Length: 323
Image (cartoon, rainbow, N blue to C red):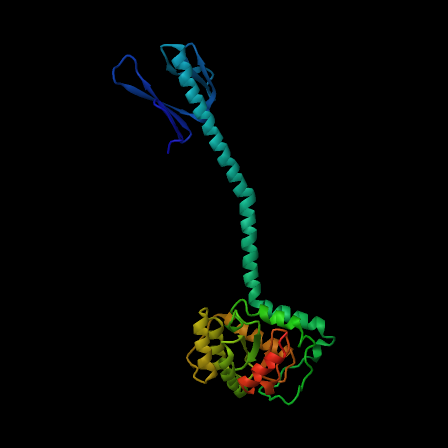
């Protein structure tokens, strides 16, 4: 594509292409091609336009004219076009330098940070939670595994000191963002958030799931599936749910699983699908909870199990404890 054009020359691909009419032959034009980078000095003198090349000492005539006026005018056009061409090359060079030394490093940095954040998010819920848990507990060894499937007769184990705090709610909410650890039913119009640790084979969890289905349209509900009492077949189903990217299909799969209509022919190959369930289970156990289900509100406060018996009690508790 031509950078500049005139009636008798054009600049294209770092070359000055000069169409020179031969005065001795009618309707005959020769083409004179010069690499612009070879032009050391462009001069107009004695009705001639000529240049000194980079590898030649002698002056090379580009064109001759009948009078000085025509020669000078054509010289100005060529000189101005070459000048503008160099300006354009200079701007391109500056732009390339900016892209190479400024934009590429910035975008590379942003990409690396984004990639790192994505990778970190897959394990952050468990690692950050456990680290925080260890710091806040004076005796980390006192954290014991939860007794599975235990009704709410009072806590049988020492609970983590983080239970009942806003910090716990923040950590639980962070775990919902990647979509790997949770099954999300969000209501943007409600400030109430329920974080639910639930095992699909736990009968209390199955009962609670029906209660949650009645109130999902009013609150945001985030299910953290755990493998506390489930067998290997169910674990494969949990892994399948964990790695399902479609939110609605994820809910359908969970509904089948919690209602004991799971498949025994699922074979998950991706370890990250199992690790997310393992992370949920480890966090659940580290909290020292009495058993599943365990439900927390947006302030990190655990909702008593006797409140979870039906939607009326649950909604009443939420209203009384709203902040």
